[in-house]
Length: 479
Ligand code: NAD
Image (cartoon, rainbow, N blue to C red; front, side, top):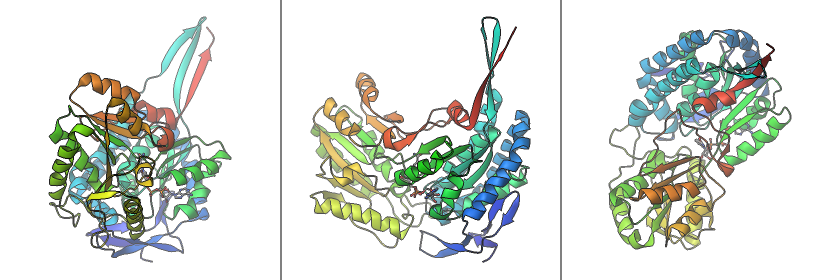
């Protein structure tokens, strides 16, 4: 196995990063590009031994990093952000090659926000106050103590963005980290390790291990020295992680799947509503927050569908490195089969494809809109994670809310209406971690982020991230 591979002109280390050193495994796994299925390279395939080594490195580095003054921790996080900003172009091409998401959005949206993630949590750390209050003359002093080594496990659909939403606050809080990126998109986590080392992050504070979750995961999540586990991914994996973490009662943050609704009322700005609906094909539908269930008021359904078809027809599907492309490939042949299975079963069950309904060339799936779908059908209830939307109609507000809430998920919801009072009434009844009114995907790191029901456990963002990554301590001092 080559220690380094060149991806889009960028050198990427294929080994783990443990205790400030590159460590190779004897075994490897093959990383392929969804753009054309070509092999990118062989990556170190970690197992329990690498997991134990990485947690040990994180444990050993913890006391010194936890004791590092906040201002110094914040300075190093800003230096990491500087390093990300210097390498935006490199990170963008590597991530696009690895997971097939659009180069233009990596360049102009995602990677600048990755840098921002570090700056934001560095600055928030410096603002984090110590609360003091008095009880019968005694002083209560509440402090945010670092918790210890954290295991952070992330998916492939937005690899570096999702990883740094966790890495940045975990490090800012004074914790050490073992990051396990998804095996379908392992590369930018390796570049992050380089950037962090160049920025002066001490050895062992950030460790990156590669491999299949089924092989390395359990050894990470069941390790008694791990003090926090933050996971973004699917519900079945979350169940396994929760069971594995139970032995040590390790606190968990779980950001999981969704089947979010877009409610379009007859009083909505129809052009905006159609725009919001078509936006759900972003990242080839591989967005946890995507509003994949479009619920439209009966009286405007025909006109809405006509305009949707028109707008969707203008989307360009193709090579994600091309600036003109709107929809790229799906991540893996297995994922493509899964998407097609969902669509076929829906059509066999009576659904009608308004557009799409079939795979395209290579690893691309035609943007699909299905109507005539039953509320209790698989296509309405289960997350597809591809460019597949359903359209249902409702007669009134009550029915809209009932349909919107009638899945086991509760990640997000979007409401399109021209009536502010209706917006207030409806949003108050929706079960979702985030609700957008006449907009979509506006995300501020100050806000709590997470899902209800099977979409997750806990919230991250701003103070909520520090709540999770810190051990809060109250010290009571006698007068
Ligand atoms: P996944 O659950 O298959 O894998 C996610 C990660 O978990 C990968 O790194 C994988 O290697 C690891 N893993 C697998 N088995 C493990 C085990 N037993 N122990 C420890 N780790 C293990 O999910 P995926 O297919 O990569 O991601 C797609 C899912 O992620 C979708 O359901 C999507 O909605 C969800 N997601 C949620 C959010 C959110 O913020 N709520 C964001 C993005 C994606």
